[in-house]
Length: 428
Image 1 (cartoon, rainbow, N blue to C red):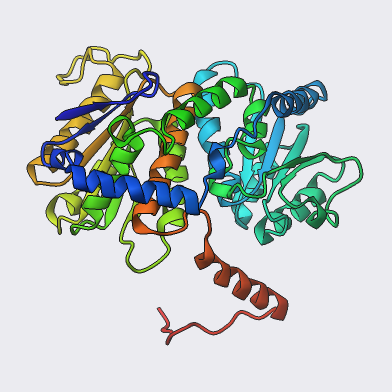
Image 2 (cartoon, helix red, strand yellow):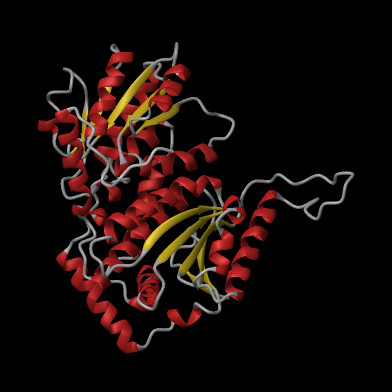
């Protein structure tokens, strides 16, 4: 394998398999072409996520808000939001929970879709508990979020709601007097908005160190800027390597997570990648999440034996808890080994098996599942996707493909009639 050290030690390193290694040794003509595309892309579509919007005043305000919730005895916060309004917060929650094992005092619940049983389960859990809500919608008009807010007000009529939006004028019809509003910068797309009130309010409610998160995020943002040359910029190297793979017959990036705390982070990457790059028929780069080692026993057979069209990107951490397997009476090869060692061995075995079948393998190793590492990982993937979009010549910050379905859904609900199936139906 070949290791590519990153320019900041608390993030970790990238490792590539032997058959992938040649992709990281691009010719000077190729790297010059890529650099020109990177700069053109950033100039044409300026990345709002690099702007230092999270200043001291905003962080002070967010921390004061969290302290008020705790002082008022709020034990549970329902986050009402979809997609970019909740996925980043879920990724932060998972890592913060890992850092706070044994001292959980506050809880987040995510109301995203219109799933009756899931809502009923949360409502049952929240009986006799003091609850508040975060309504997160960049537009302020998201159908699912407005629907869930109506349900929240029905079951918790005396509970307060905090609003997070780019358009405060569009939430006046649903906002009660005195309820607080935090603003999302207008030019900051939802999937890039985790380092804003969208992600920082839930993190602060959980007593996460948002100042550490923001500081490490901006440190990584600066070290991966377009002005940092290709040779010193791992986000650019990875973007070009992925592009070369996707334009040479591969069409899917399988994102394997071997740290449970990073599973929600994989879901965040999937949305970031899919909505940013999926703009035309020339882009064949589908992101697919996979959970290790569980999915080794489900989809791996397909990836090992079917067409060689998949890139495999693995995620794990250098340190991961201290539990070790006792030595039982029956023979087991894992006795005396740590759970981290077992997980890491499982991951390495799959990487090596895929490599023997000439499947491209890329591995990201973070220092630990903590808030510092996650902040830098988020910055890295925002830049990587932005640079990859520049190579494809697409706008990474819009999502026109999802609008038609929203329009049709509103028409169906307005007519109060479920349309016929699109094709012939059969009775089962």
